[in-house]
Amino acid sequence: MAHNCIIRLEGVGVAFPRQASLRRGEPFWALENVSFDVREGETLGVIGRNGAGKTTLLKVLAGILKPDRGILINTGHRVAMLSLQLGFLPNLDGRDNAMLSGILMGLTRAQVRARFDRIIEFAELGDFIDEPVATYSAGMRARLGFAVALECNPDVVLIDEVLGVGDADFRAKSAAAIEGLIRSNKTVVLVSHNADTIENLCERAVWIEQRVTQAQGAVAEVAGAYRLSAASPPGDGSGPGAPPKV
Image (tube, rainbow, N blue to C red; front, side):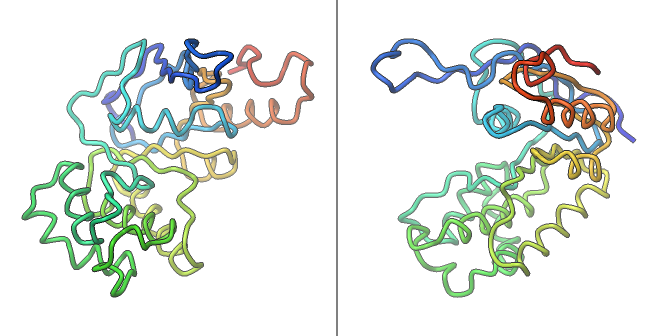
C-alpha cells in the first residue's frame, strides 16, 4: 500500500528550442502542464500515446531535465531509469561505462566494483564487456544500462515501455526482474501506451496527452478514459485534449 508523497509535480513544463528556420525562436513545449504525485511504495502507471511527452517526463522525474516552468519536489529520494544508458561514452569499454553510470546514479566506486559480476552476468555481454561501447548494438547498450540501473537499487525506479530489447530470453529475464520490483515495496513509475499493461501492473494511473495531464486516479477509471479517447474519431470532442472524465 502506498504511503506518503515523495515526488510532486505541479504545472510542470519543459521547452526545447526549435531547429526549423521558419519557427526559430519559438520553443517547442515537450510538456506543458503536468501535475501529479508519486507515493512511497506504489506502482504508478503513466499512460499516453507516442508523442504525448512520456519520455521527457521520465527525464524530469530522474533529474536529468529541469522544468522550464512549474515545480518539481523530490523529498530526497534517489531515482533511476532502467531504460537509460546514463553517462555511456562510446570510446570507453563496458566496464568503464558501467562504473561511470553507477557513479552517476549515486554509487561509490567500491559499490560498483562489488556489483560488477552481477552486472556483467545480467547484461549477457560476454567478452564484449571489454570492448568499446561504440561497437555495441542498441540492444547491447540497453542491456548494460538495465543491468547497471537494476544493481543501483534506487528508491524510485522508472521503467520505460521501450525496454523490450534483445532476444526473447533476455526480454523474459528483464520482465521477471521488473515484476519482482513491482511486487516488492519499491516505488515504481511505469510508462506505457498500452492500457492493459498499466491495468495489470499498476495501482494508480496518470494519463498524459498533448503534453498535459488529462486525468489521474484509480487505474481502471483512468485506463477506461484513455481507451475511450483512443476509440473516438477526431473532432468529436472526446479525443485527446478533451476535458477529462475522471
